[in-house]
Image 1 (tube, chains in turn blue, purple):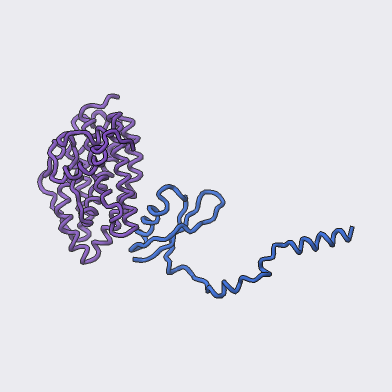
Image 2 (cartoon, helix red, strand yellow; image 1 turned 90 degrees about the vertical axis):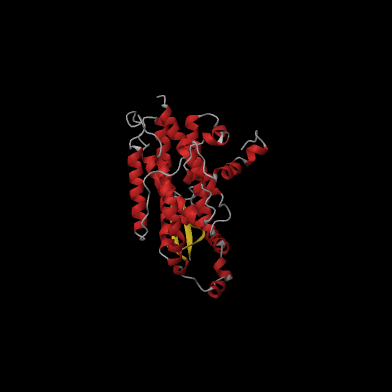
Length: 90
Length: 244
């Protein structure tokens, strides 16, 4: 058995969203099982089924390191500065 | 149009086949060979029960009574549909034989002069493609291994001949009425060819026998029917007025 990851997309602008995974002996059965497990109530009108071993996995430590405070800038400081500068100019 | 007696019998046979197979498939709920197959197989069970319901509704307003309330001899199910198949090999082989037959039977009804029947057939046929795909890909996969071949071959050889009973209805007048567009004999030939070809790919040569072995259409029930019927009527026996 191989493990496959299943993604579903609804009509409209929503992106593909991970629905879950299935175990299946081959690609054909994977599509069959994915459809039954995640799409039998028309949860999506497009489906991607991907062999899990083909999914590239990013390094978790690097991901954790990427969490630095200056990346969370919500723009408040810049907005405040702009407001002050503009009012000074007028 | 007012459907003839033969037409109503044909629909009742089909409905009873679907009821029995749907009920039998549902036995596997939660105990299928693995989770994914459990979901897929019992979802098919639900589809078959839906087909039974749609067909009964063409014949009566009291579906529950028709489905559950008749004497055993009044059912018309084919014996292959009644077999309990409580081992997975039998359940899978019967699933494939049944759905191959179903696809042909619905195809013969999609353009029926009985409009409501034709519409039911069109809806059901759309589901059949998935059923067949599911059954055949798993069966082929298993037959490709020595172990699978060893376990499935004897089951195929013993069950296949019973499948002929799916086509044992009388179709006198039904072609002329436009109720049926493919005669029962032609449907049976199509099914036999398809079954022989499918298993020939795995060097299994099925002997279909000279004539239909079973007699479900004429009111004689298989040994398994009583158990199956008790199971499907368990709730209604406890509470005849139960609502669901």
